[in-house]
Length: 358
Image (cartoon, rainbow, N blue to C red):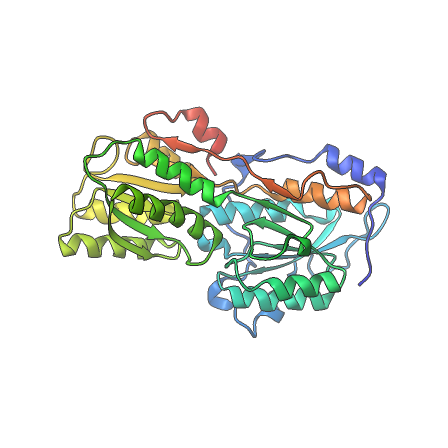
């Protein structure tokens, strides 16, 4: 593997123009790139074919003072949710040839497929491996192989269960805190009873573990009733089916705790079909996560009650980490926790929607 370097002059110019955090949030609503590999067309045999060079067949033009930095990006399916679409778009708009990079990408919701693709990228000799893992477990060998090959690993969006010495930095959301913030809000509603339909994301993923863990703890400590607890794998239609099944069973419930906005949307579709009222002052409290703009608008209309933020804009932080390393600098912190908040339907403003909606 040949290391690529960017001159201090070019680095300074790039860093000066770098957008930090949620900047340009209004640009994150485009559809996922057409050449993304999704769960349906990936597999252990597909990893080699789908870890594609985003720069195309044309020879990459060298940066002004050296060759392009090659990145292998392992991420979840862009069609997973509005959050993921925004996340993928943010990464691919940041890591361009104009900014000194060439990228290979692989997208899947399956951990084993991601691992196979990561091993292929290591064999190909990328300079950096950027990872948002489908599952927190099973990555030790991959990260060790990358380190042995001189490839630097940067985690984004989600943590993995691996020693910190195996990666350079992690730019992530505090999923545990997201769950705790949401559950504290729910406690504060002072409901006469808490009968909850809990719709979970992909089991074993960091957001699922964080958002589920906080609710499980509250159910145990507060004596709340868990009417149903089932994964819909971030999917709206599956969430609708879960809620419809509870409605058909005749069981009483008054809270929908959905671990992303799409699943909350599916749950609401089932409520609407059954003419069950929901939102502020209505029969069912509706909670979601991710802060899609359309979801925050549902909050503003008071059709939903709560939405927890999960910040998809990690690319500028990763860009800064890479350029610090390439210029020989020292990282100020290894773990960067993105600042996030939760929104209440009775308090949300149009400015909140414009600022935080993705």
